[in-house]
Length: 196
Image 1: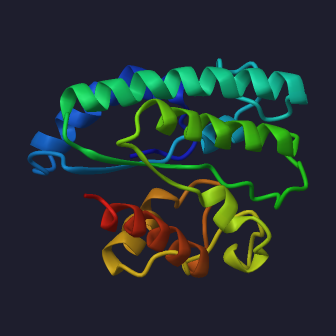
Image 2 (image 1 turned 45 degrees about the vertical axis):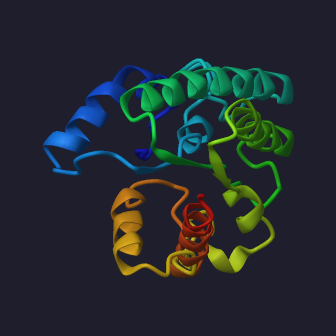
């Protein structure tokens, strides 16, 4: 679940409709597995354009945005569990395509968003985390050749997942290349595979 350029503010107001649409319109039936990737929109939307947006923010402004992000994510997670109480939920930590250089926001802000995800997991141990931030950091080869801020396809070994990720990320600045997508898919599948 996620959409390029959207934020947790958007999803807090639209998650109910998304879940209804996924089960009825798309014929998914009972939702048993869900991956939530939210946070990248916060880094591409200018600070103060939403309550957790932080592009161009100072470190303190970005850290305040991370606190709001965690609060918003908690609302979204509660709505998901209210709709599908037994869902296997994996949260993805947003990656830093600046590779720790702090181009959009100081690196401490990415780390605060990462910590927010782990705080959510700590509050609800049934949640799993795929740490895309750590996976992608220091690996420029995971980003698209034509644009160094777009990760590639190494992250997805599942062909359907690769296609879904390509479609999902077609318009976002944080697009993994083939290598990166393969790594991300492997990290997600590893979380689902370890479920009791």
